[in-house]
Image (cartoon, rainbow, N blue to C red; front, side, top):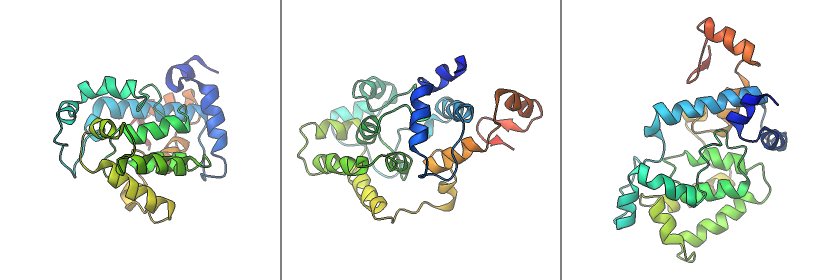
Length: 222
Protein backbone atom coordinates (compact mmCIF):
# COMPACT_ATOMS: atom_id res chain seq x y z
CA UNK A 1 0.00 0.00 0.00
CA UNK A 2 1.36 3.48 -0.82
CA UNK A 3 1.96 5.80 2.11
CA UNK A 4 -0.74 8.27 1.04
CA UNK A 5 -3.39 5.53 1.28
CA UNK A 6 -2.81 5.38 5.05
CA UNK A 7 -3.15 9.15 5.35
CA UNK A 8 -6.44 9.35 3.45
CA UNK A 9 -8.11 5.99 4.10
CA UNK A 10 -6.90 5.29 7.69
CA UNK A 11 -6.74 1.52 7.12
CA UNK A 12 -6.61 0.82 3.38
CA UNK A 13 -6.71 -2.95 3.95
CA UNK A 14 -10.00 -2.59 5.83
CA UNK A 15 -11.36 -0.26 3.16
CA UNK A 16 -10.32 -2.78 0.49
CA UNK A 17 -12.20 -5.55 2.33
CA UNK A 18 -15.31 -3.40 2.75
CA UNK A 19 -15.15 -2.44 -0.90
CA UNK A 20 -15.15 -6.15 -1.83
CA UNK A 21 -18.32 -6.60 0.27
CA UNK A 22 -20.07 -4.09 -2.00
CA UNK A 23 -19.65 -6.33 -5.07
CA UNK A 24 -23.07 -7.02 -6.52
CA UNK A 25 -24.74 -4.17 -4.63
CA UNK A 26 -23.41 -1.33 -6.78
CA UNK A 27 -22.89 -1.17 -10.51
CA UNK A 28 -19.40 0.35 -10.49
CA UNK A 29 -16.74 0.26 -7.80
CA UNK A 30 -13.70 2.55 -7.70
CA UNK A 31 -10.08 1.66 -7.08
CA UNK A 32 -8.32 2.58 -3.84
CA UNK A 33 -6.68 5.60 -5.50
CA UNK A 34 -10.04 6.82 -6.74
CA UNK A 35 -11.38 6.42 -3.18
CA UNK A 36 -8.47 8.54 -1.96
CA UNK A 37 -9.65 11.27 -4.33
CA UNK A 38 -13.15 10.81 -2.90
CA UNK A 39 -11.73 11.27 0.61
CA UNK A 40 -9.99 14.47 -0.49
CA UNK A 41 -13.28 15.70 -1.94
CA UNK A 42 -14.95 15.11 1.45
CA UNK A 43 -12.15 17.03 3.20
CA UNK A 44 -12.74 19.86 0.75
CA UNK A 45 -16.46 19.80 1.61
CA UNK A 46 -15.70 19.87 5.35
CA UNK A 47 -13.38 22.86 5.03
CA UNK A 48 -15.13 24.93 2.38
CA UNK A 49 -18.79 23.81 2.46
CA UNK A 50 -19.27 23.15 6.16
CA UNK A 51 -22.74 24.72 6.01
CA UNK A 52 -23.93 21.48 4.37
CA UNK A 53 -23.04 19.39 7.44
CA UNK A 54 -24.91 19.11 10.75
CA UNK A 55 -27.48 21.85 10.20
CA UNK A 56 -31.23 21.72 9.61
CA UNK A 57 -33.33 23.70 7.15
CA UNK A 58 -36.76 22.30 8.06
CA UNK A 59 -37.14 22.15 11.85
CA UNK A 60 -36.29 24.37 14.85
CA UNK A 61 -33.79 23.60 17.58
CA UNK A 62 -35.19 21.53 20.45
CA UNK A 63 -36.14 23.74 23.43
CA UNK A 64 -33.80 21.95 25.90
CA UNK A 65 -30.72 23.67 27.26
CA UNK A 66 -28.46 20.90 25.96
CA UNK A 67 -29.78 21.17 22.41
CA UNK A 68 -29.39 24.96 22.48
CA UNK A 69 -25.78 24.64 23.56
CA UNK A 70 -25.03 21.83 21.10
CA UNK A 71 -26.45 23.91 18.26
CA UNK A 72 -22.94 25.43 18.22
CA UNK A 73 -21.03 22.90 16.16
CA UNK A 74 -17.63 23.44 17.84
CA UNK A 75 -19.29 22.53 21.17
CA UNK A 76 -21.09 19.56 19.60
CA UNK A 77 -17.96 18.09 18.00
CA UNK A 78 -16.28 16.53 21.09
CA UNK A 79 -19.55 14.93 22.22
CA UNK A 80 -20.05 13.42 18.78
CA UNK A 81 -16.56 11.95 19.05
CA UNK A 82 -17.19 10.53 22.52
CA UNK A 83 -20.49 9.05 21.34
CA UNK A 84 -18.66 7.52 18.34
CA UNK A 85 -21.30 9.19 16.17
CA UNK A 86 -18.66 10.58 13.82
CA UNK A 87 -15.30 9.39 12.54
CA UNK A 88 -13.81 12.55 10.98
CA UNK A 89 -10.73 10.67 9.80
CA UNK A 90 -12.93 8.24 7.78
CA UNK A 91 -13.96 10.41 4.85
CA UNK A 92 -15.14 7.54 2.64
CA UNK A 93 -17.30 5.84 5.30
CA UNK A 94 -15.82 2.48 4.28
CA UNK A 95 -13.48 2.18 7.25
CA UNK A 96 -16.42 2.39 9.65
CA UNK A 97 -18.21 -0.79 10.69
CA UNK A 98 -22.01 -1.12 10.31
CA UNK A 99 -22.27 -0.49 14.08
CA UNK A 100 -20.38 2.76 13.68
CA UNK A 101 -22.64 3.84 10.81
CA UNK A 102 -25.72 3.07 12.93
CA UNK A 103 -24.32 5.17 15.79
CA UNK A 104 -23.66 7.92 13.26
CA UNK A 105 -27.26 7.91 12.08
CA UNK A 106 -28.64 7.88 15.63
CA UNK A 107 -26.38 10.61 17.01
CA UNK A 108 -25.45 12.98 14.18
CA UNK A 109 -28.01 15.15 12.42
CA UNK A 110 -28.65 14.57 8.71
CA UNK A 111 -30.59 17.27 6.90
CA UNK A 112 -33.42 16.45 4.48
CA UNK A 113 -32.50 13.21 2.61
CA UNK A 114 -28.78 13.13 3.53
CA UNK A 115 -29.46 9.96 5.58
CA UNK A 116 -29.91 8.04 2.30
CA UNK A 117 -26.11 7.99 1.88
CA UNK A 118 -25.69 5.93 5.06
CA UNK A 119 -28.73 3.72 4.41
CA UNK A 120 -27.26 2.76 1.05
CA UNK A 121 -24.02 1.81 2.81
CA UNK A 122 -25.84 -0.31 5.40
CA UNK A 123 -27.86 -2.03 2.69
CA UNK A 124 -24.78 -4.08 1.79
CA UNK A 125 -24.65 -5.58 5.32
CA UNK A 126 -27.37 -8.17 6.06
CA UNK A 127 -29.49 -7.23 9.07
CA UNK A 128 -27.94 -3.77 9.55
CA UNK A 129 -30.98 -1.78 8.42
CA UNK A 130 -33.26 -3.87 10.62
CA UNK A 131 -30.96 -3.30 13.61
CA UNK A 132 -31.08 0.43 12.93
CA UNK A 133 -34.87 0.23 12.81
CA UNK A 134 -35.08 -1.48 16.23
CA UNK A 135 -32.78 1.05 17.89
CA UNK A 136 -34.46 3.98 16.20
CA UNK A 137 -37.89 2.81 17.35
CA UNK A 138 -36.62 2.64 20.94
CA UNK A 139 -35.57 6.31 20.74
CA UNK A 140 -38.80 7.48 19.10
CA UNK A 141 -41.02 5.50 21.52
CA UNK A 142 -39.10 6.60 24.62
CA UNK A 143 -37.80 3.12 25.47
CA UNK A 144 -34.10 3.97 25.08
CA UNK A 145 -32.75 5.34 28.40
CA UNK A 146 -30.31 7.46 26.40
CA UNK A 147 -32.94 8.57 23.91
CA UNK A 148 -33.30 12.14 25.19
CA UNK A 149 -29.54 12.59 25.08
CA UNK A 150 -29.45 11.37 21.47
CA UNK A 151 -32.29 13.73 20.59
CA UNK A 152 -30.41 16.67 22.09
CA UNK A 153 -27.18 15.60 20.40
CA UNK A 154 -28.99 15.77 17.04
CA UNK A 155 -30.15 19.26 18.13
CA UNK A 156 -33.20 19.69 15.90
CA UNK A 157 -36.84 18.70 16.39
CA UNK A 158 -38.26 15.59 14.70
CA UNK A 159 -34.90 14.27 13.49
CA UNK A 160 -35.43 10.71 14.72
CA UNK A 161 -39.08 10.65 13.66
CA UNK A 162 -38.16 11.78 10.15
CA UNK A 163 -35.34 9.25 10.03
CA UNK A 164 -37.69 6.44 11.11
CA UNK A 165 -40.18 7.39 8.41
CA UNK A 166 -37.39 7.62 5.84
CA UNK A 167 -36.02 4.22 6.85
CA UNK A 168 -39.48 2.65 6.50
CA UNK A 169 -39.83 4.10 3.00
CA UNK A 170 -36.30 2.97 2.11
CA UNK A 171 -37.00 -0.62 3.24
CA UNK A 172 -40.22 -0.56 1.22
CA UNK A 173 -38.34 0.64 -1.85
CA UNK A 174 -40.24 3.92 -1.87
CA UNK A 175 -37.40 6.39 -1.33
CA UNK A 176 -36.72 8.14 -4.60
CA UNK A 177 -34.28 11.01 -4.58
CA UNK A 178 -34.82 13.99 -6.79
CA UNK A 179 -32.73 13.60 -9.98
CA UNK A 180 -30.30 16.29 -8.84
CA UNK A 181 -29.89 14.65 -5.40
CA UNK A 182 -29.48 11.18 -6.92
CA UNK A 183 -26.41 12.50 -8.75
CA UNK A 184 -25.03 14.36 -5.70
CA UNK A 185 -22.07 12.57 -4.00
CA UNK A 186 -22.95 14.41 -0.76
CA UNK A 187 -26.39 12.77 -0.61
CA UNK A 188 -26.18 9.44 -2.43
CA UNK A 189 -23.55 6.79 -1.67
CA UNK A 190 -24.21 5.38 -5.14
CA UNK A 191 -23.40 8.78 -6.63
CA UNK A 192 -20.29 9.00 -4.43
CA UNK A 193 -18.99 5.66 -5.70
CA UNK A 194 -19.75 6.70 -9.30
CA UNK A 195 -17.95 10.01 -8.74
CA UNK A 196 -14.89 8.16 -7.44
CA UNK A 197 -14.97 5.59 -10.28
CA UNK A 198 -15.06 8.43 -12.84
CA UNK A 199 -11.82 10.00 -11.59
CA UNK A 200 -8.28 9.45 -12.95
CA UNK A 201 -7.01 5.93 -12.23
CA UNK A 202 -3.59 6.87 -10.80
CA UNK A 203 -1.69 9.72 -9.11
CA UNK A 204 0.18 10.36 -12.36
CA UNK A 205 -3.03 10.60 -14.38
CA UNK A 206 -4.53 12.90 -11.75
CA UNK A 207 -1.49 15.19 -11.88
CA UNK A 208 -1.70 15.37 -15.68
CA UNK A 209 -5.44 16.13 -15.58
CA UNK A 210 -4.93 18.83 -12.94
CA UNK A 211 -2.08 20.43 -14.93
CA UNK A 212 -4.32 20.44 -18.01
CA UNK A 213 -7.14 22.14 -16.07
CA UNK A 214 -9.42 19.10 -16.38
CA UNK A 215 -9.57 18.10 -12.70
CA UNK A 216 -10.64 19.84 -9.49
CA UNK A 217 -11.68 18.29 -6.18
CA UNK A 218 -15.26 19.51 -5.95
CA UNK A 219 -16.34 18.79 -9.52
CA UNK A 220 -13.95 15.99 -10.37
CA UNK A 221 -12.66 15.11 -13.82
CA UNK A 222 -14.07 17.27 -16.61
